[in-house]
Image (cartoon, rainbow, N blue to C red):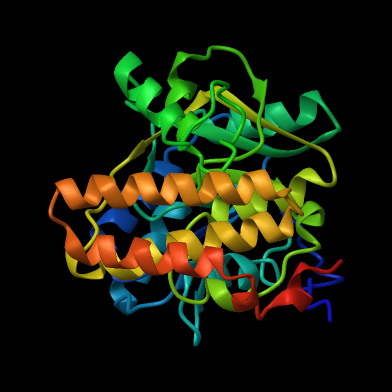
Length: 323
C-alpha cells in the first residue's frame, strides 16, 4: 500500500521555498539556526515559510522570538508543528503534508548558515537546470587526510568519488566535498542541509524501521528523489554544523540501527548480493574499531546488526520494498 502524505491544495499563498527544521529540546542550537536564516539577503522577491517540526518542548516566548526575527526578511512566515509520534524520518515525512512550496530545504537544528547568500544560491542553482530535483550544501571544516581516505575506502565507508556512495551504501565520501569548487552531481546529500523538489519525494513512505533512530535518512531521501532527476552539490552553499555530541549510553542502539537501516536501503535499491557482503564487511570493521575504543555497547549493537543482515528472514517489511 502506498502511503503518500497529503499535500495541501488550493493554498492562495504559495511560497518560493519552505524551510523545515526538525528539532527536539535543543533550543540554543535551534535559535542560532533560525537567526542565521533571518540574516539572509537578496530575497526581495522571494517568499519563504519556516516550519519548526518539534518532537520536544519549546516555550511560547521563544516561539514568539522566532516569529519576530523572521519578520526581518522581506516575505516570510513562521509556522510551528508539534508532533505526536517521535523520530526524524517521520518529521521529514510529515513535513511534506505541511509545506506549500515546491522547493523544500531541510536543515538540522544545529546547523548555521555560514553567510547571507545561502538561500539565494540555492534558488539560483535550481533555476540553472530544470532537471535538478535536489540541491545540497557543504558543512565547513569537513576534510579527509590521505590516511583517513585510505582507511575509509578499505573499510567500505567511502568511495573514491565525492558524489558516490560506497558499495555498502555509506556516505563517507562527503568528506571529499570540501575539495570541490564547482557544482557537481551526487548520489546523496548530507542531512544537515539538503533540499528537494517536493514532487520528487512523492514515493516517500513512513518506513516502520525508521521510527526511532533514522540513520541514513538523508541517503533514503536522496535515492527516492533521484528517480525523478539530478541531485547536485553546490560547494558555495556552506553551513557550520554544530554537531551536538551523541550519548555513549545509546551507542548500542545507534549501531544496530546503522546496520538495519543500511540493510533496508539495499533492499530499497534492489542491490545485488555483493553490496550485502560489502555491508557486512563495513559493519565488521566498525565492530573492530569500537572494540579498540572499548565501547562495548556499540560492539554489541554492531554484532546484533550483522546477525540481522545475515538472516534474510528478518526482512519483515517486504511490502515497503515493492513499488
